[in-house]
Image (cartoon, chains in turn purple, green):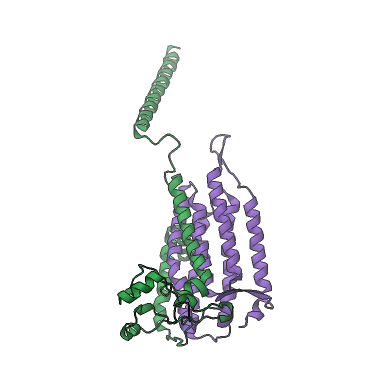
Length: 222
Length: 201
């Protein structure tokens, strides 16, 4: 399928050597949206969870300390920028690298939490993210072997062979695991159950955007 | 139906997720053996055939990319040559030390001791430089997270400030058990007094 037919007319490219970022209305929309959300997250303060105590009228506040706040905000901004980069990238391998960056930063955002269950599920997600290295980079490498190029603009013109379809499936498994969509949602969903709402939200938002972009990439190269 | 419900419930436990993922990935990779391998011979990022440079007796054997230092560019292909104007010049470059070593040792290409320009991959640092930046930033994020955790000791999360010392903990435990014992005794005495009052009536 041609690039133009999916995301609208090609509006321009940003050449960085062999890695050419290309812009069309869909990409620009996703890119600007995620940057706006990142800016909002960078400006906002964290929520404080208030738990009612059992058997009394007291309440238990789970707040985020200042150090933890700074650490998480930094990683959340990096996560937003990485997601924004993945939205406009025009290179398959570059996309997988952005995906890996988002995965590790997601673990980092919850790593400073003091709830044991959250840390345990973050550990389980970390195991998946580690395993995802194989399908993500392996899939991209096999597509390079099958077609001889990694540029999405070139891949769009090459007709799909059985091997390319298999590689795309392998990459899809990798993206599914790394972004934690069903049936792999449980470990990532448990990670959200902690105070520090806006920074936790970027974990969710980045996976949503990545899935949208990856579906577009799949339709482009196959 | 109940079986499916049980399966869904198992999926809700984070512990089972990596296992499920590994299983699905393994099945897909095994299924990959059935796929006919269609390799493209016209590759963008080529390497010379194994041992061909060794057999030809080149001084920087597995990494010789041709060209003369500062005179002519080496052999590099790019997807978009119009974006990389100085293509091949990095591959052909070597530092003076490397140049001297190249004359002495026939095995220089296999070492990284003098880091010659010819061995540094032009693809990594020029045509696909953005990927290298991203790779190192992934590493940097990993180090930031690890060092933040190491400095702030969030792993030792059940301890409050100043509660780290075992001796102090033991003292505190003894004091609190003493207090509890005295409280129990107190309440016992009160209860006994009440009982005695009731009986007296």
